[in-house]
Image (cartoon, rainbow, N blue to C red; front, side):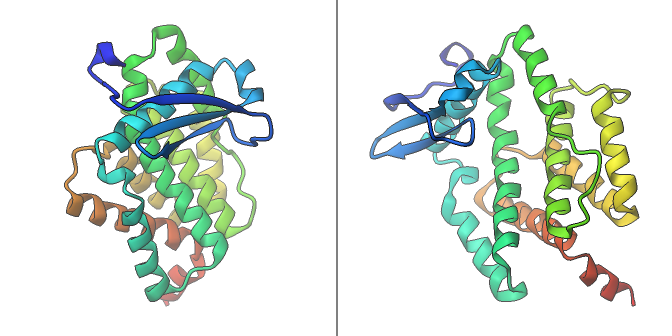
Length: 230
């Protein structure tokens, strides 16, 4: 990372958590940072990419990036709670959508640092994220659509997406089952994530994130769209 110009000045420690369900995460501890990794992730071919990903989060946090200002998300969620009322499951999935935006930005660093062999591993990793069948639960399906958009936009953003690949066909099957409205919203979401910028001003980031989360909420509440059409 330093060789590519991404210098981290804080002290960073690494810990293994045998009870951790996810692969790993980074957290700030005073002026230092800690990366926590599950023990099962130590056997993953994505371990190097995981450590790079968490270091990239630390890099963004250290520089006070708008995407890593947790208060910005809290303000938008509070506004949405006041205007729309949010159920706990909806909040959870909106936070996941926010994480996709964070991750696509920090992964610019990851992809800049990875070697060609690691890039092939990353392509396989993202292909496993794409769902080909909706569940029938609007909230879960909105989350799956958002995750599909993140995976495809991640590869497209780095010119690694083959439009004839299995990942694209899996997503087409998912969208066909979801319907025309979801297909349009997916197109917007993929384009948004592919074009997201780390140099947005605070106002630009707030406006963009608000519009993005509104899109996700509209997917979780398809009945509201039907009401708009009546």
